[in-house]
Image 1 (cartoon, rainbow over the protein chains, first blue to last red):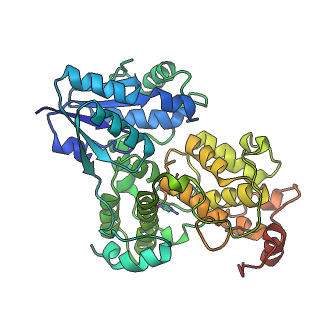
Image 2: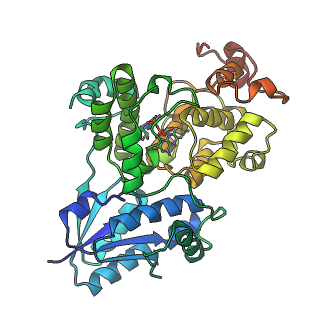
Image 3: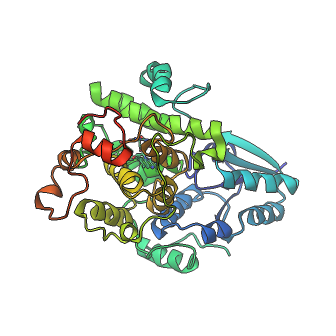
Length: 141
Length: 261
Ligand SMILES: Cc1cc2nc3c(=O)[nH]c(=O)nc-3n(C[C@H](O)[C@H](O)[C@H](O)COP(=O)(O)OP(=O)(O)OC[C@H]3O[C@@H](n4cnc5c(N)ncnc54)[C@H](O)[C@@H]3O)c2cc1C
């Protein structure tokens, strides 16, 4: 089994959990053309993302590109004989769509998680009630 | 199309990226003041000791400016919290950790509600008919209100806006200009380096009253105080904010929520 790490706009640290779990795996980042064509985004945002990606891939094999996100990931994974794609999860419709496309193409997608601030996992409605539940843990974990 | 990753300078990188991504961004290709990347993030984190954070509601105060790094996973909330627990004290430490917890809260709401956060989570708490699009004069920073126009200009120039200015701007757009918060959300997503789904959509909903028990609004005195009188003394515009809270409540919402100055 060989792994490809997929980086996206919510996972741009060299200490990203998916990268750390796979120190020797190649990594890919795609500026998703269809998304950028239908969404107004400033140049500054794209530059911030690009600068962050550059540091993530300094010491490993990588592909940074512009294209259709799922297609680019699939093509790069196949070219490197990767069967698993590791990614750090963030709640986002674009991420969900790409994960679906990767699974449909036969890849196993393994999700990693960013370290959170609290261990709270109940329902949430208003901040004040949430804060009462978590404040002790936030001050002294 | 593959992108190169070696550059002789930041300027060189900016020129290259502007060309490769042509047609995929909405603004001029001007480099950011806030740099991306883990090294810049750690430098910013190291400098921040939450000194004066108790005055964070003043626009001139020193907040951390870590939001873009947190948004893009360049820093984790856990490591920022650990740094502040170690390096800050007393009320400042507590205030900061509480603000950070807002981010966690909004992310949990997003996980719970999914993409539903992009629609009204609750009915607005006042009778309103919001228009869909952000008025042109706001987008172009020519409302004639020096405060509002400056917030917009600074946002477009720097990719950042102080939290209190975000609140004021969102209230102006939603309540005074009767515009759907989703248009404001889109505008912030376009320009804020920290623009995300959870904090952005849910803060707009909090102001609009579709994720809170009453609408958020401010008056001129509040802007004057917390902007350290950046605009008001020299302002010659007819100020829509220059009223008491009870008067504004009546004129904007037709009811009394009991907000006080
Ligand atoms: C209408 C509106 C839209 C907003 N959109 C976004 C957005 O798209 N992305 C975003 O990260 N924040 C958003 N915020 C929240 C807040 O304004 C910014 O996080 C904060 O101004 C960032 O500056 P800072 O890093 O100096 O904050 P600091 O005061 O130093 O706070 C430290 C960190 O805690 C978090 N935080 C602080 N205050 C809040 C808050 N009220 N809500 C959520 N998280 C908070 C941020 O991650 C921030 O970096 C929005 C607020 C409003 C009113």
